[in-house]
Length: 180
Image 1 (cartoon, helix red, strand yellow):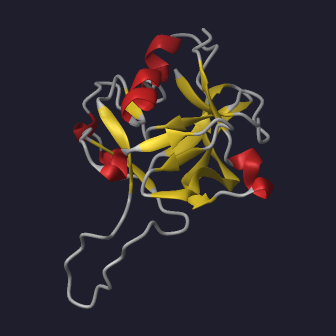
Image 2 (cartoon, helix red, strand yellow):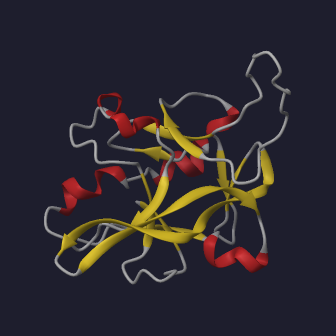
């Protein structure tokens, strides 16, 4: 399945959660982008070789509903909220909550709260660490390559932001089947 924003938000092909870069080997540790935050990207459907192209957008619906993981199936990593509650550094103020606009990164799947999410009945995806914050795409879009001449792909930043009815277009998701 794809985790796709319900609203097209200016991208007629839709926006999907996307692993940064394109780790064609499937071994994410081989790629410099593996430490970069997860973003939203033009959904890579209805293109030649969709089976390969989609590998950095493919999620397990059952992992989300059963274990609360946003699990990249082919990359064998899970989305994780970037938090700073366990930082032990001089001068660092211990944090207990999730920051506004906290980034989402991908790490090996583990049984930890920072990797657990819930999709509510309206389609909002929330971290179990803070159910007042929803997975939210940024307002600005950036060009992210060009699959076919004149049809650039786009990407947007992604983070956990306060859930809000005024931001619903950037916060409501759906699990979408892959259309070839």
